[in-house]
Amino acid sequence: MSERTVKAALLGVGTVGGGVYKLAESLREEMVSKTGADFEIARILVRNLEKERPGIPRELLTDNWREIVEDPEIQVVIEVMGGIEPARTCILEALQAGKQVVTANKDLLAEYGQVLMETAEAHSCDLQFEASVAGAIPIIRPLKQSLAGNHLTEVMGIVNGTTNYILSKMSDEGMDYQEALAKATELGYAEADPTADVEGYDAGRKIAIMACLAFNSRVTFSQVYTEGITRVTATDIRYAHEFGFEIKLLGLARNTPEGIEVRVHPMLIPSDHPLATVKDSFNAVFVHGDALDDAMFMGRGAGEMPTASAVMGDVIDVVRNLVHGCSGRVGCSCYKSLPVKPMEETENRFYLRILAANRPGVLAGIASVLGNNGVCIEQVVQRSRSRQAENAELVIITDLVRESGFRDAVTILQALSTVREIGSCIRVY
Image (tube, rainbow, N blue to C red; front, side, top):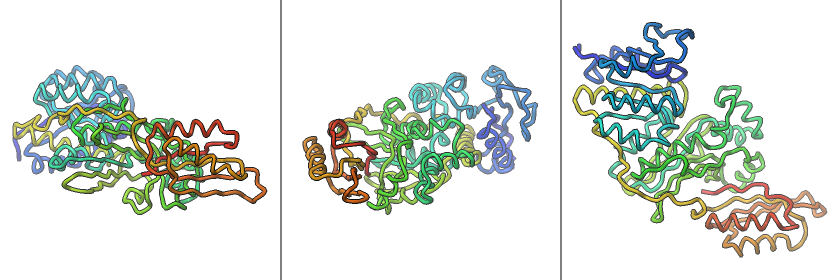
């Protein structure tokens, strides 16, 4: 047995923190073999000392951060509180005290990753964050290390299980959005307030982190274009199937000669694309590079034990580095300063659903507006209940077009007396 014991503090013992503690305890007998040292969670920071926490020894609990950061025996801090503060202050103070840090905090990393990484580097500390993106799926370490021999040009993924579950139910069972959301809430996939998930903010933070690592240049959440799934309808999904697509909420980052594109929005993706087959609450990340070509990472993207799995993987790496005296060996990888391309300058294909007057010349007029703004029609379908119907539904798939040109065309279409409603505008991969 090793004579060395590495002691850690756990900040937060909610769903993820409880999973981390359980997993750490189950691995106690193997940690020497895995790392070369015993491992012990010696302190747990909580807000309320009186709250019952089954399975957690009360003597480990403290509500005093100073007891942790000023304890020289605690070498590792595991942050799973979430949110910006006090997590940001705790992590910075831990690094400044020479402690190694493992975090699952995507919100914090997507906005303050640069200062955190610089602080870790200045104090020769590890800052590990595999659990911040896609739960149990290993993607942070592959982007930083395994795929470092590539020039990566695209990272695309389903990185929010709630929205993927909702869209899967709409696609497979014909549910409408509200019905699928209610089911997701009932099963615990959706929070009481699902805004961060359904509006794309959660996925936006994750794609910002992955873009930094993939392209070696700083990207923050505020630079990510986000659009959620609340306006996707069962009708849109039926039309997508007719054209040979599935609709997914995708985080997409591309490294182009003009700069980095980074966005989150619903997208029609071909039914034979690997991401189209990812269902329910599963996550997946698809990566393209010059040497590896294509690779996909898939698995459970959230939850108590999947996230704890990623946290403990980082802890094991950190303890190994402590044992071998090589902490801080993989630091910040953002050594470039690439611009982030404004969304208006990107190019996309679009699915456009329009309710218009059912009379001769209307389609020609719509096509003229699109053409005058540089939008070419690739496919079009017209649906009306009968020749006598007052209105008809037009569904158009465009060719590749500059985002700003398409937006201008939609603005003009909305003002036409023959256009009753612009039902949906969804980008096409």
